[in-house]
Length: 329
Image (cartoon, rainbow, N blue to C red; front, side, top):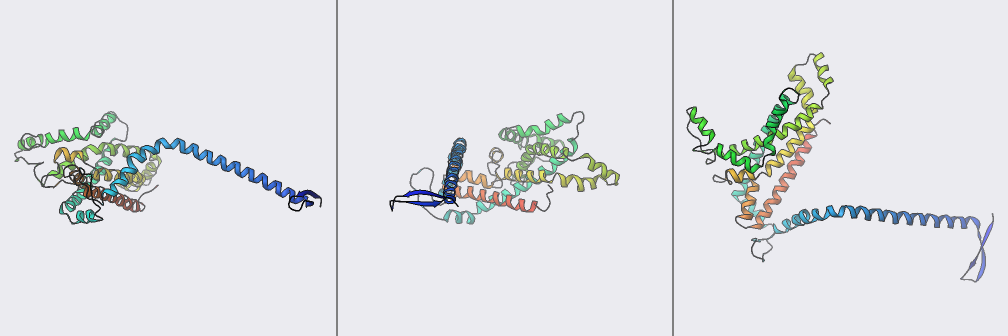
C-alpha cells in the first residue's frame, strides 16, 4: 500500500498518510460539494415556486384566512359593530345561540329547506336527463330551456316568482280561481311560504343538475345495455343495475353541492319572504344576516356563521362516509 506525505502544523513534522485515506478525503470533499450544490439548487427552486404562488397567496390570506380568523375571535366577544370597545365573553355567544328559540327554529328550517331542495332537484334532474340525454330533433332546445333558469340571477328569478304567488293578482291564484278554488296566501302564510321558496329554488337548480346527469349518462358504454338486452333484462332492471351504479359518482357530487347551496341560500328568502311570516322561513344564514346587519350583534352573528360552517363540514363528511357504501368508481 503506497503512502502519501503531508506537513503537520501542530508538530511541525512531515508525516506519511496512507494513499487510501487521501482518496477517502477527496471523495468526501467531492460529495460534500455536490450536496451543497444540490441544497442550494433545492432552495433556489423553492424560492422560485414561492415567488410564483405569492400572488395567489396574498388574496387567499387577505380575503379568507384573515377574515376567518377574525370571525373566530369576534365570536368570543360582545362587539356591536359600531363601538370600538368590546369585551371578551368566552363561550357565552355559543351558549346563547343553543338556548335561543330563534336559533333552533332557524336550524330546523335550514334542514327542512335543504331536504326539500336536494331530493326533488336530484330526482327531477335525473328524470330530465334520462329523457334528453339522447340527441334527437329539438333536444338541444329543451335542454337550453330547462337550463336557462340556472344562468338567471336568483334575485330576478325571485322577483318574477313573487308576482306569480302574489295573493290578490298572482298567476297561481288566478289559475286556482278559474278552477273554482279560493285564493291562497302563498307568501303570507307560514304553512306555504317555505314550500314556495323550495319550489323556486328547485326550479332554478334542476337544469344545472340535469346537465351533469346527461354527461354521466353519455359516458355509460352502450355495450352494457346491449348485453343486458341479450340477457332479457327489463328497462327497470337495467336502470337499477347499470344506470344508477355508473352515475353514482355524479349523484354523490350533486348531492353535496346542492346541499351546500341550499344551506347558503339567501337571495330567494330576502326577496320572497324576508324570513317570515313569523320566522317560518328564517334559516341559519338569514338569522346571521339579521344578527349582523339588522341588530348589529356581531358576537352571536360570528358564532352563527361558524356553526353554519361546522354543520356544512359535518354533513359533507357524513355524506362522504355514507357514499363509500354505494358509490362505484
